[in-house]
Image 1 (cartoon, rainbow, N blue to C red):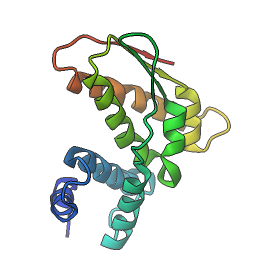
Image 2 (image 1 turned 180 degrees about the horizontal axis):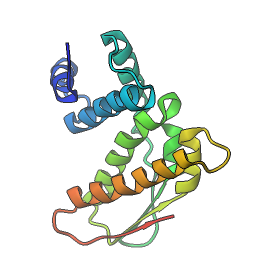
Image 3 (image 1 turned 120 degrees about the horizontal axis):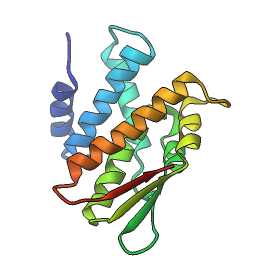
Image 4 (image 1 turned 120 degrees about the vertical axis):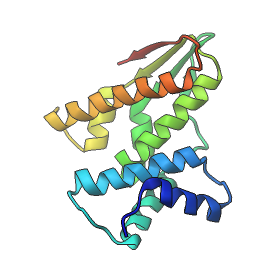
Length: 165
């Protein structure tokens, strides 16, 4: 049966009683779909395979210790490499939902500047690469684009500077 992330998240949200933000769950489910379709090249997977990967992603979202360090008033810094390490075995699958949550927390503080450091190390960590490859560059570009998109979605009309290095 063809399923979409929205169909699965609706079911999982009801069973879990709201332990995760439904939007985070939707992003996590989308990441798992993307992983199977684009990274592994699969058109079909069993519910068990999907559930196993989804469980790993949700388990990888350890939210107890934020990766944000406050610098000066209105300036927040996030270590992307550390977030990649926290993503665990499922790396990229858990990284994007974790980054989304981090951005949401930062934007709630009405920052003047958001600084993201260690992007290159983050990309190498997520890809498992020792040297920079075209795959690394594509992931680098996806992360920067994702940060921009999330900040636009969360800004609510407030202006905020962004530095990614």
